[in-house]
Length: 375
Ligand SMILES: [Zn+2]
Image (cartoon, rainbow, N blue to C red; front, side, top):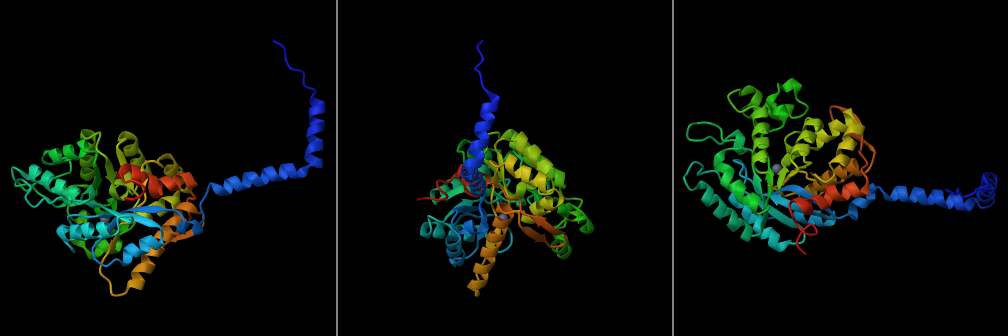
């Protein structure tokens, strides 16, 4: 083989002449590189111009103060109806959702749910599927499964009904076949099963509500029972379009969450447990950032804000804006952030391409919705 002859000395001489006689060539290259690097990240100010989607909102009011704030902050959102035993019942939540989705089709979509009131009836699954079909024709795009399954619903023998109960299977089969997204809130944060002094967060809440503090109720299913039932259900429904609410109830460990994301390719999670995410970043910034980058296709931005009637609209506007803006700061910058009770951490400063997925593209893919919402 003939090797091309290169006069190394002549080549070096040429390079030195070019580099020193025409320094602007190198300078413009450096500037170009710096600009490219800057373009990889959003800034705090980009908050206003980037289209974003919050996948976890509860609208409990006909007032449109929150919706108007979402529009000002360039947010679309998913309003989630659920079967909670306090506050506005699910029928009332759904009426609001149907009403608002018609008024603001470019800003919101909604997820419906189903009742377990007649659980145990022979035709429960059939009736439930019929009611879901009605909700979809009323505009629902996804279905929420709430923690009452696993935490409070019991069968006629007094046993807790878990999410992998055979009675639920026909409904899950129907959703799986129809590629309808299921957003599941399974169990509670692990803290709920810990003594107060071992909790990362929630000491005040569980201190005031011992009835919900599972550490005090060993007769209830354990934390692992909840996770095992969910995992078992996912094993049986490999094509279910599944979104685990609140980091899939694995908020306390990125390793445990990563294991599930690896095991179940049909699982994504919403990020509505910000204090835990910030605690992970405070304890191990690099590991937390790496987690976001590795699982960038499986994470959906969400806040779990519950919006109620208010007589002070400015307050709701201010709080909503502050929540969204401070989360944006955590994800797009490496600025200092204070986590009360723990100290200061730095934002994870994710690249634009990752932010675009977490804040919009993944919602479009997993929920699924087009361009955020209907156009
Ligand atoms: Zn919620």
